[in-house]
Image (cartoon, rainbow, N blue to C red; front, side, top):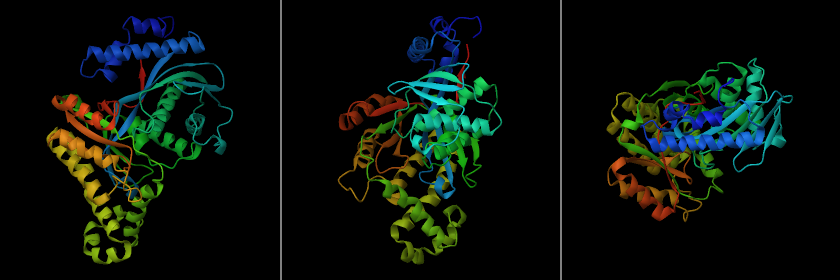
Length: 429
């Protein structure tokens, strides 16, 4: 915006309606567009009050959902994931300094100096670490990061399994790329964001979350080479499916679950080690099947069951993408249900054996299946043991499903989303 209207004025005049509709009102809903316009306007007004009436721009980055491939990525398998309509919306402007200043709703202001782009352990786990890490990634690629001011409003709930950290990393990278005036491929932005989380934020993670947030839409990812995964779009318009994506927060306790999470890759890799390999992807399923009696003795029955899950789930992730590409949503739902049952019975990641009294995920899945009564699909979401479940709910059942879930788990536990068609985004009038 040069001498054109300020962002607040342009939003009120409807100049951004077409851009907002593409992200927030794919189905043409006037109510959704009005809500998006109001949200953007509140954010722009906050920016003006905080930083002054600068020449600011709107940006967005989505959260992500794992659709298929439950615990396959760490064995170099296939995953189907997607960006969701819950996003981080930002209003930002260059400030002519060597500082990035961040104001996020509900959080204290953060300032990061671009003169120091080295990891700092004292900063681990903070917003500043992610900002510094993303800026460092741009510098490593030969771009000179510039200072900017930004206000952020997040609809990606922390702890929701939608990866708020990856969304923030992609948002920061999208803003920097715009102000630097460079083009960076979505997959490259994902790698940059992953490094920021690993080395600057201090959290080990794979590349799935960042890739889903950066690329957008539903994507099939082959992690045979984790450093350079093969990403294929599973193009499908979910708004035409007659279903809504629901992420249900079981409000269960994540504490003391580190050993449960770690046991899954450890046991799968132990099975692979029986064949002189590190990952199950490198072991032929026929060889594993033939050796099950010996593997049971070495690794135990649960490890064998989890390996069986891996091989079938790895195929399912590919089949789900193929079903979407073919427009066969019924087939897609059937495979999602198969995936959910495999996670429960074979992978066994819906409750912790150390805490048998805590079975909120099991309860939520049971209630959800009763409400769906054979329609749609439902499964554990993400790592499991606690946290969230995922359901594809027919539009005709959505109100009944949501009310039934929240009657058991509490008000505000069932969140309704769509699969968003794009990743990091710059809104232009």
